[in-house]
Length: 204
Image (tube, rainbow, N blue to C red):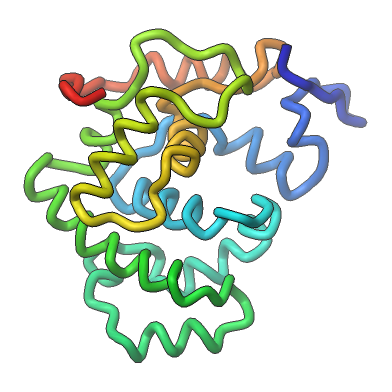
């Protein structure tokens, strides 16, 4: 059974969301289906930056990341140069990790290629939705996240390991990983029910 917590407001949530800024992120964003290529690109980038760090670190720096990466507009980031890398390495408001910064720029260029071939990032990622929903918060990877990671790496993406991709699937609503007792789970389920699914990929 997934761990839950009941806050001072009397609301039962997933156990990791008992305090801010996690509470607001959990209630308003985590697990709700994303809309738009830039939204998916931002989430991939932030999940990549989170690797080895706490999600709280990323949440508290989120607006700084958005400013540094031009709102995570794919076309804009794809045209970043070495001067942008140096600018961000001097920016104390973000995680100053050269490899991760360069990976986001690389991934923006790869995202443009993927959109050209697949139509949209949203359509591409949703093809990896599992046929049956996993038991909430019992795994950190899945067959689908492993297949997604493998395909993205083949396409030249960086910092997209299976665990990072499963975190993306949790955050973007591709799986509903809210605990059964969590008050947000049925809201996410309703939001997911209205998503127009693309045809599934043969690799998922």
